[in-house]
Image 1 (tube, helix red, strand yellow):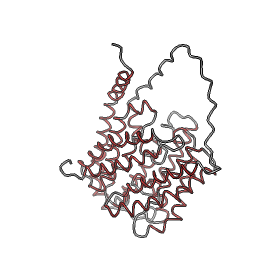
Image 2: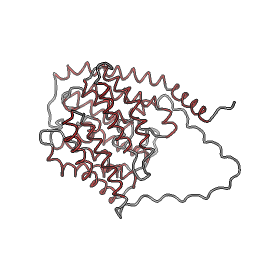
Image 3: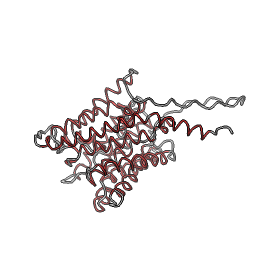
Image 4: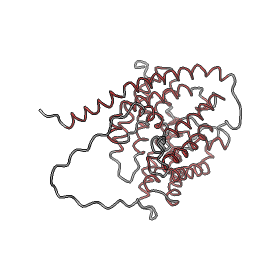
Length: 400
């Protein structure tokens, strides 16, 4: 009996996943060793902490630059600086089609300058309009930087009208909705703040993209003219499957997932951000990560989640060209550590639950969105559900 299409697909899927097992196991070993080493250094470094306004996230400068990496739970000035510098480097490498460019930043659109412009406008307006709410409590003023403004640019294209519209909508919609979700729901119910952050993102994005349909100056890029239908002759051959990723693809993809929240998705941008984080942590371990003293555990959970997620869904990456494996990296993984502590049981449980639940749920929502709604809506919706489910499950003593 001839093999069915589904059987061929299953065969290709198992081939991709099996071939990446050595890369996955090697990455897990590196992450485990790195995490253990950073955790061991936390105490000694804390005894020699450096105090400097350049590191203080509570200065006005620190609040702005810290917001650049707030989505990753870092909120530290060096991480923000490293992120932007290396994002620009990655953009230049992509423009030059350099062989070391990595994954093309901002999905190969060439729109990074406008993505950054719209995100920065949204961030500055968010602070100007809603900074007064911070007081003594943390507030999600960062949310426009990683949501509506850059998403609108990626859907509607380059230009000042698009960038300014995205920035204004982000500040007027995303920030207040996130503030309301955090202050009125998360804090009274004892839920992680990230649930309120991402709820504000997806709910405001639905409104913003609906509004864009009615704004006369917002026009979707013209689609190319469709070629005429060919006369039916012979059956069209099935497209050749994408090549199975090589062993270097997995660790590169793991790194790139760390900056998917900013719509960068590039290894160099991620390395710049992580280098800045480690520098800030080494100088004063008590500052990054909301002064939790859990940065090594948070980073370990994020890396392990990314490794398992990218490996498990490698077949879907191969089939679709992109897959939202970053979802638990910037939601459940760090949130679980902050809520339940940095024990290895929590780290492993968060990585497993996040890697298995977060990406498929995000993709299920993405596949049902209108074409003029950016896919990030599905990703942040999945973050809401995945964090609630994962943090709840990890909190059940009989399970973990």
